[in-house]
Length: 207
Image (cartoon, rainbow, N blue to C red; front, side, top):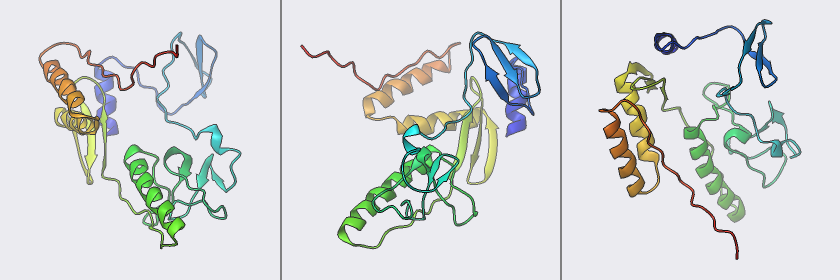
């Protein structure tokens, strides 16, 4: 998947630099860990997320800034404190590592915590978090994607269509799904995709 993505990016005149990281950026110059510099007035950083600073003062053991939780998603030694998603280091009993902080894990962790919160209040047994990653999807440009679903890897147009289908299904409300679907369908026949869907309404100032 990685080799395919790199090849497609290079075909689209994207320069791929491997084996180094960004050390600093001063607003006009990107400095790499190998000492080389790249002039840039615009820097887009899609390299992942870090835990919220709200986590730092909370009690409990930390794992790279995230709260270390048990199999029930509770923080050991702190009654009533739960953590999920980007804020939690969730152990995976199958691999001996931590679950990745992705959306498919975070959504399911939230459901387990909701049930366990109720169970704790009512004195019922807690439910452990058990989940296996369904797969990974990514788009790497117009009509090109990479995917791994249930261990099967594929790429190209089919992966791109699957990526769009999954995210279309996750949009709230049928009218939005239909509007986006029409826009994406038209995109197949025109040169540029300009579809945008706002999910928040403007808030009127109090009078």
